[in-house]
Image 1 (tube, helix red, strand yellow):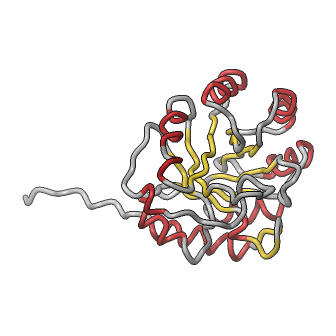
Image 2 (spheres, one colour):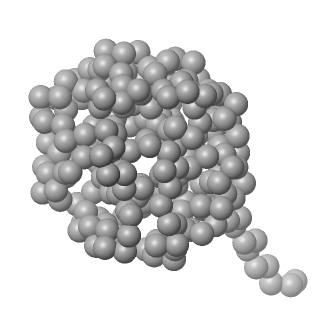
Image 3 (cartoon, helix red, strand yellow):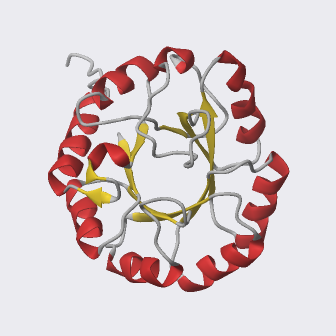
Length: 224
């Protein structure tokens, strides 16, 4: 089953659109430089509006324990998403300290970036494979730029993984076909302006992703 994450939600209407679309994850961005940034108190309101079954994910960038403490105390979260330069040791430390599943984001631009995926797979609960941020970019992700999906075609890792980076309703099916991803993540690709989610694009993205998922083969029945 294809699982979709919509990241960077800022309003209750965003949460409602994500919930009605059939997405599995709702992401809240706590990186102040992002147009999708929300405060812990704002995120609490959004998280409480999420229906049961919609996983609530906190995106942070090189966050210290003070910020993570505040988030976990304020917002009812289901997962922490580490989108900075966190080492495997830091990932393990965060996971142990907060008792929440941790998703580590890793940027890929070329073959040389793939080794880090295995290193982090040992300690993270999930891996999010994103496009490496362009040189000089302010944001570590959410730049709307894809990478060469053929780099990870047919590869398998120790943990569940998610594909991100420049995905849109128009290209997500092709990305799934090329990579074999069973989870996808989007932020800018479902927006009408930076940080402004478009409910129609959210619905179209989820529909396209789920339609592209491989269908289970029917069970073989012995002739009677």
